[in-house]
Length: 421
Image (cartoon, rainbow, N blue to C red; front, side, top):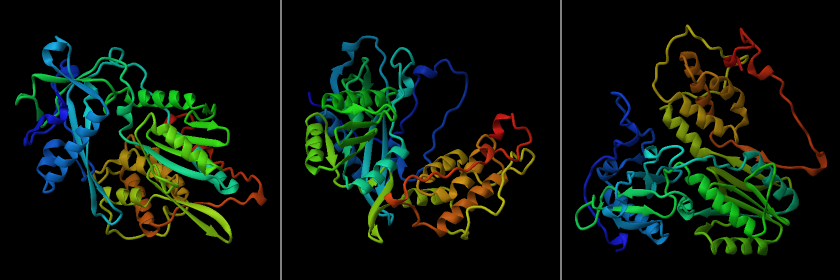
């Protein structure tokens, strides 16, 4: 019986945590809150005005997983007393730069929290390409005239085989013969939410690249070479560089024989970073910018209408632990904002020092640290279109700049205290 034939029940109920691994915990209360207003749980999505679009996204997600042969539908009696895990829906509205909703996305995930370490999974670490490697290859592509190609693996995790027997309850909203409890899904391949899913996918891609004749770099495990062809991978996003366009096309075609992927052509964006190629004084250059992430940070703090600043910090700016300082006024997620700003530093090195100062006090941020973050955001608002330019000039050779700042601990009261570094 095909899973696409299951009936979608018009039921609005929230995804919830269920028994399992938390049965031994004392009386604690757990709650989950979506920080992103465009991200929803099942019940929230079904109560939105664009509910029909979310339902279409559900049907598309299930059909795609079924076509990838991710699971086998079986009766619960076939698995005996084997414990199943819950299926969790996650929904997101994709928006264009002007804020218009362009796509409704549904993602079916497994409740990985119900798996036990050492029983259902072991190693989980999966490497990703270093951002410095990406920048170096973009610079080399300008100097050597290399062609670029960007590819995206559709539902990447579900294209890798699963290494342990796993059974999943039917997703919320689906049933067989009117009863959602009599049948379960035996997973054949990975599903998002499983702890080992990322590693299984990386191993699958790695093995196939070796079969195609690629060699893994010893400096960056996500950089592969084959003659004058270079491939970089970051989970399901890959960049290819080569002087021969035919080799790029041949490599993409070989990957399509094994995986489902999208050929996105010449690189225009990568990992949320806009990559714009232009000519300056006869020299080709790349501009790397992150306007979408910048707007997300501004919205997270509610500073869309705040005043602007010309600099990310005041002259002589230094932060201390400020243990006796005033508590914060606002309740936005300090660590989350620091994480976004740290990633933004890759294309905005002008805020690197200020972000470094603020990130040292995530454990117990005070009002002084909150104000410093707001100052950075107000500066970003004034310079929303700025980014980093990769404009190599081979006539200058290699230049290195060193900033010796005592690991940001020049004003530390105790140089041996870990928090001072």
